[in-house]
Image (cartoon, rainbow, N blue to C red):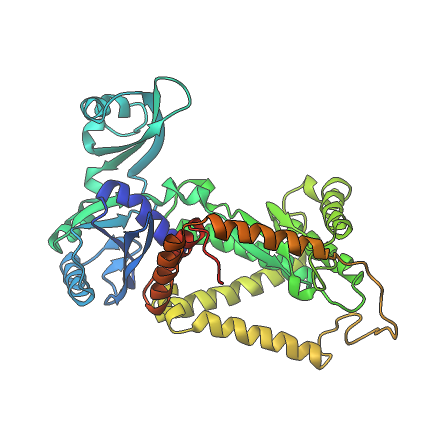
Length: 441
């Protein structure tokens, strides 16, 4: 949810300006986020979570606007929010239309005068019943054309939320979740328990559809599609009997495909020992190609749907995941959970438990704690010739000779200072150091 929140807040800044606070007004909490521009990028400037009394908002409808205004004012005071504008999500409300359209190239003043006429063909309401706004994105490849984001908001359906924001002393800016949700994607790991991994991906896809539909009120079906990339599990690779890793990677990749992955990375068999060799990389590539071209698993969507075992396991995993989401919501959201170390602790505990199971042979790892071979399996790993190191050192010396020493010193000092500040986003400073060709020594 954090990713969604930041994304629509960033988009809303197009309409609310840089002096904006992002507000997510839910049924249990108000979440506020503010970004600030730093060195050509953005970093977190403020994050605050404020609990709401029960029954203020039910199913997205404001039940007691005056009490909600009081809660907003209390949060604004407590968090020290100075921003004049509040960017709020309408969460896929059917009365909000946001479209990227192509129009003949014109100035902003000319478009302001003609936007009502241009919008009529895109807005399925009486044009006099909506508020219109737009943002010129830039010229298209076609000569004489430009891209524009058109926003149309039905007046009578958003009065409650805009009134509450105004009564709390802020200017409302609005963004529909369907304007960006179809572009979101995820990155998953595919592990060794074949059916559990398939069920995991299926559960995630079902949950995402429900979250977008029920929590964020998305209307566009594409907003409910979970697009994800999967990579086979590096932790499942073993140095013992390394050719076993080919089979491990194959089953993990197949589980990802059967679970609905859109893109896939297959690990090389020797990655646990060294950088992948060309032959190992080719085997990893051929694994994907054989799954895609020879097995037939890509010929139908969700091929294991209806299996009693798969469906029951999917339900079980989904139920457990909802419990986790509820625990995170009870803490105050993912940002608050991270600050408390909740997800970090859960991940650490899970990793420790897995290793304990392997060490005590409760979980079988072939070649490690069962079917152990007396002799080592020979394998050719990638070896970097010594002359490569000499060539690289020579190149590095030339870079140091030609770079601006003062710029390097400034960049490194700025980076060190940023690292000492707990609230600093160090990435812009790292980028500056890279641009200055800074090195550790």
